[in-house]
Amino acid sequence: MVKKPAPDASRRSERSRRAIYDAALALVGEVGFPKTTVEGIAARAGVGKQTIYRWWSSKADVLLEAFLDLGERAAQAAGQQSDAIPDTGDLAADLKFVLRATVDELCDPRFETPARALAAEGLVNPQLGAEFVAKLLEPQLQLYVRRLRSAQQAGAVRPDIDPRIALELFVSPLAQRWLQRTGPITYAYTDTLVDYALHGLAPR
Image (cartoon, rainbow, N blue to C red; front, side):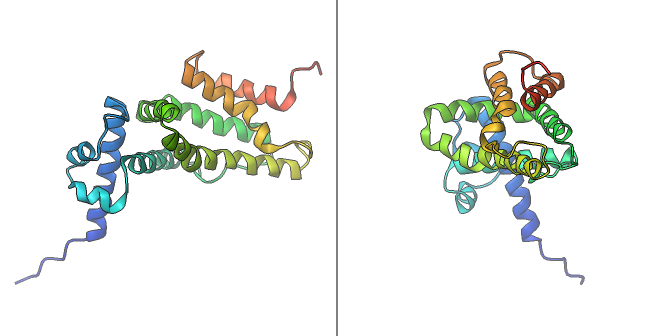
């Protein structure tokens, strides 16, 4: 009698983890963060509540990790590295490329719905807001810092510029427009932000 191969526990765990990610993101988008529960995530994912608590300590941890994973998968699908901004030697082109990819992400309902739910909750839940910044937002901003520092070393940016402040010239307006829906989110918009940030408003 031929023995059946033993089940692959790692594959089973990965399937469960992926199902939990998908369930968490779907629920927070549908009912908001306050009404999303570990029990609800478990039921939707088809796993036991104990499975979730074995890997995460709270629903916030689940959601933040699921959101980070979503961003990494989106970057991979777009052919980008999630841990770097391209450095082709052309700063404007590199920033426009990344911000256009960001536009695609912000306009994708799979990303936008849970992102808005988490952003809204972060305003009234200081702990979640701090975790959102520390685990998701700041690491992404540091990618811009590294690219701007590289541009400084190449002489493309003034040496006295603080990269952490400079990046806000194009990142913050995009975030505000997206959060408050004050205007369309387009490639033309982010391209213009980069041009204004790099060249200023004074006559040339």
